[in-house]
Length: 109
Image 1 (tube, rainbow, N blue to C red):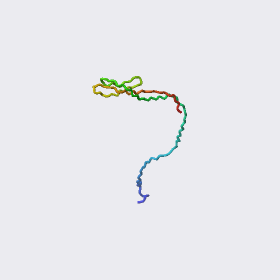
Image 2: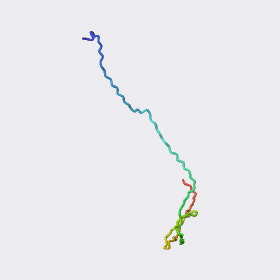
Image 3: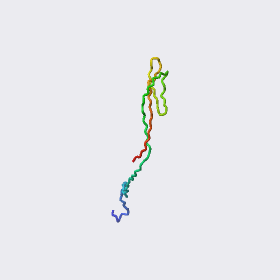
Image 4: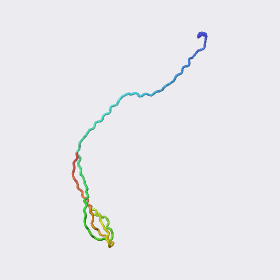
C-alpha cells in the first residue's frame, strides 16, 4: 500500500508536557537615605535632692510599753529600747532621721 492508493489518513501521536516555573525579575530599584538634624537647646529646670541625716538623741525615760515609731515634721523618730529588771521599758536613745531638701537652678547643655 502506498500513499496514493490508501485513502486513510495517518495522524502521528505527539505527547506534549507543560512545565510551569516562577522567576524573580528585577524591575527597578529604590534608594533610601536618611539625614539627622541636631539642634542643641538649653534646658532649664530645678534639681531637687533629699538626704537623711541621722542623730542619736539620749533619752533615759522609763515606759510601760515600747513607744511607737513617730513622725514630727520632717523628722522620723525611732526609739531604741532595752528591757530592765523591773519589767519596765527604758528608752535609751531615739534615732532621729531628718529629711533635708535643697533646690539648685540648673542649665544643662
